[in-house]
Image (cartoon, rainbow, N blue to C red; front, side, top):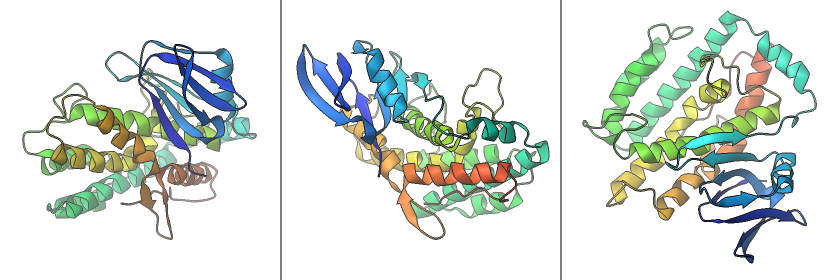
Amino acid sequence: MIKRTVAIENPGKLSVHLNQLQIKQEDRLVGQVPVEDIGVLVIDHPAVLYTHGCLTALLDNNTAVVFSGGNHHPSGLLLPLDSNNVQSERFRIQIEASAPLKKQLWKQTVQAKIRNQAQLLKIIGEEEGRLRDLARQVKSGDPENLEAQSARYYWKKLLGAEFKRERFGKPPNNLLNYGYMVLRAGVARALVSTGLLPTIGIHHCNRYNAYGLADDVMEPYRVFVDRAVHRINSEAEDCSELSKEIKKGLLEILACDVRFEDTASPLMVGLHRTTASLYRCFAGEEREIDYPGL
């Protein structure tokens, strides 16, 4: 079943009754969603209250809960601790992965990301040949940082010569930030479901980053956010504010179709296919991570 992404953007109280997440405003029920249907819950207002039972029910159903700050950027992510019954064994296998294996997995990740960027440029009518060449040149561990070289070319073709990708940069950076927040939560949820630690990355290893592996795995998936932002930026008159309509379009990314070699599936389902293949690579059962394309 495709899980839903739910955003709470107004003051209210969240509680669970008969396995339904209930949303109340001034003691009036304004909405309810079956807890088992929720994959990601985004709480994006400082005046939202929630019960302890609400949060534990969400975690018991493997829901990722994202808490946003006043600037609508993520300030915290709540994930279940024991969503996989062989978790300790998989933690050990992940932690013991060799450096050469991690470098090979990062090479595959960078190649998949650049190929997807090239495909998106092709879709919008831009020249993508340079990116395809760069994808073929990536070496183990990407020592020449071809990921960054491709990004400089990609962003100018996708969003204009004046655009600069910065977290606190000019719009539509704000749209990208919000979309990546939703995507990151979905990736972290899939990793935990697979029994992997989202903290220990294959490339992102900053000691202050609690979601290094999530940041690794989401790289080839970023293009699905980029595609949505390109469309919104082309159609909207003003992207300086994250309107309800814009947020709705970005929250729907986890339900968009992604294509693997043998099938197409919703993105959230695809994330589980990717993270399961990543575990098999750690375990020595496979050699390649299963990433989708556009």
